[in-house]
Image (cartoon, rainbow, N blue to C red; front, side, top):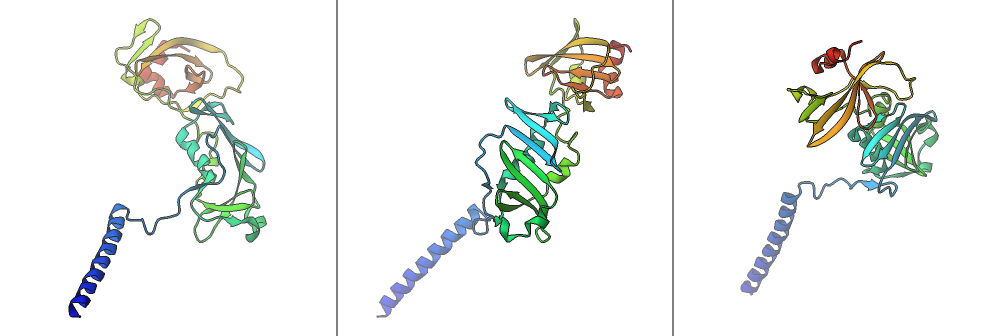
Length: 259
């Protein structure tokens, strides 16, 4: 009798050890396996976003469109856009908190101000901050979600926050006119201070010169110019970047392009 009880006890202990072992492996493999936040879920089935527009009081603040694999800002100025800055706008289509029915919330109070994001044809309305979680209410259709408050601060600087001011990456060779520049390093990671709005009236160019810049064994043709805007570089996508005087001097453009 004692032998049978001993065998049952051993079997029970083995089962307990096995269960504890499985739990232990799970915890080692994923420390949050048993306390994991719910996965991000898409609000709308948007596989490939092509356009994003933000509105405040029904007036467009910024409009971005995808051109090939790149994002371009087309309002308030035409300029290349930083994809990393566009991503927070696209992330409004995902949520990790539970959703609420619009009728279960004081929605007229929460969504009194009209801030709206459009991704393709989907609409998202931004409301107030939820006081406990410090997340922002976002409504789409008849459902309301809680999301991190990242978009409103960005929209306050919509003229510049999405614009990519980088003109070049790592430059291998620079040819101005018929002359190869001996130290092309000055052209590495060249950045502008702004992009000249293509909607502004054209201005008379005092002088200009064609520049061939080789990056990753590919040559791009750009134009450096001096006008009433200052010293500018127009790249091969026809975006015109305004340079600071110190950058123009470092590149030798002040001597190359007289006033």
